[in-house]
Length: 341
Ligand code: WQD
Image 1 (tube, rainbow, N blue to C red):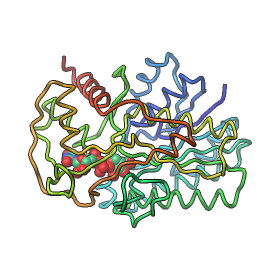
Image 2: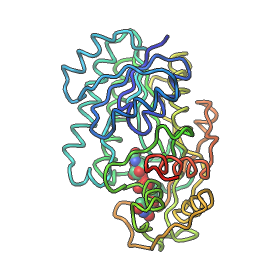
Image 3: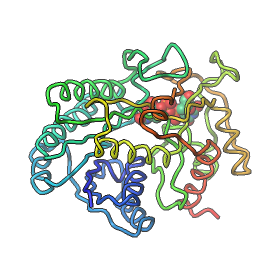
Image 4: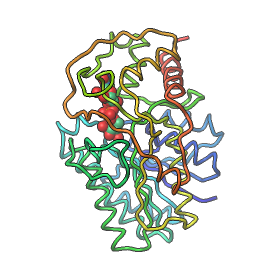
């Protein structure tokens, strides 16, 4: 079996990707430092797939630990690198934590991957690199705008580090995947999103409000230049997103990439407003969601949704699940973890 390393593999997108990799027949080894995930996620992955992935608790900021890991696992055929801090607001308060954790770790990973017999690397990037794009839908050739946060800057700098490294080392093959807004959970409700503390993102805040953990949802701004005044995003089901990572990895393993650094947007291609997201939740849950309009949130872009042509026609992947599917799975997951019938 082909062995694949998934860093951050106990996180939200990482765990769903491990499930898809194992179901595709890959042998998976997970590295996670458990700073923003739980070891119990390993049980969820095992319950879904019938196979426990290998797991090592390693802080990727420890260069010698990264080197020791690759000494032991020289037979790795590909790396999917999710491990990073990703809270936009926190990155503004603690920029050095974000630059150290997101960039030092990337550099140490790349230095080790370069020494493998097979150097395939998938990078977890984000639509945040576009900032407020001038035209919708957003294509991969849209200009990179000055980052709105240190978090977004670490994704931009990360892509530049990879670009320069690929230029210097032709044997390193990489794909950067720019996620739009990942939401939802696995249909089994055995894994899902586990935000720590008050959720910053919309969908976990919606489901926690419906579960009565939060009093009401604050809609950050209803005076934007959009049809209903609220911001528009491209909400992509995390399972569709996970499947895209398997397709991207197989593209590299099969040598189908046309350059050694490719970039793909991963979205549905459909923009949905905050109010439309709320309506989708109410439709699938049958519950009325308490919310109020609140002032705009600093750093929010008005709208961002993907042009998925390149992912569909070059990568050969297309999202198939809908906003309703994602909301339904998110609500099922919330009810499961809160023991709500
Ligand atoms: C979506 C919309 C909010 C919460 C961020 C990161 C991005 C990626 C996904 C990591 C916005 C509105 C939200 C709430 C609200 N993360 N909202 N009330 O900001 O588009 O993207 O998460 O890669 O990089 O930037 O996602 O879910 O926070 O917000 O009205 O309580 O929901 O204003 O319009 P965002 P989000």
